[in-house]
Image 1 (tube, one colour):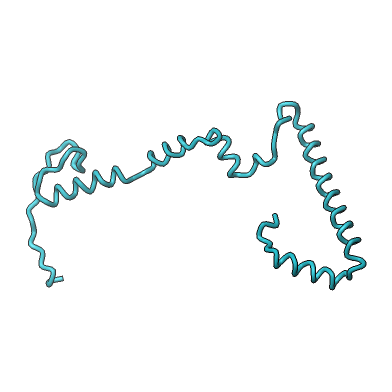
Image 2 (tube, rainbow, N blue to C red):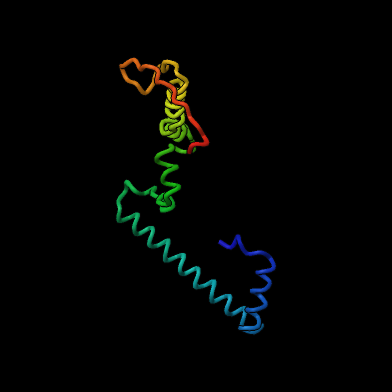
Length: 139
């Protein structure tokens, strides 16, 4: 929670707190603040326990942290820490093999050769196209 606070920032906050509350009232303020935090934590824990008891015995080991999207996906989709499912999905959705096949077929056709297996011409034998002379200065 406070991982982004550097020691210099903590010292600055302490000096500002001393100026605002004074050195004699600062310990009392800190005690009151920690007491409020303890009460809020106790209230949150009580609410979690009440919710677990209302859900029934099949949700006794239910953790609220599991509702975080990353944790949910890691637990239910990836089956723990295995990444085999992700790699399988990634390879199934990868368009590179199909694009390489189409590129090879287009190159074969453009070079005047008969297209190879898996070409764009399905079932029909493609005739080599006639080459048109291209003049780059004309365009």
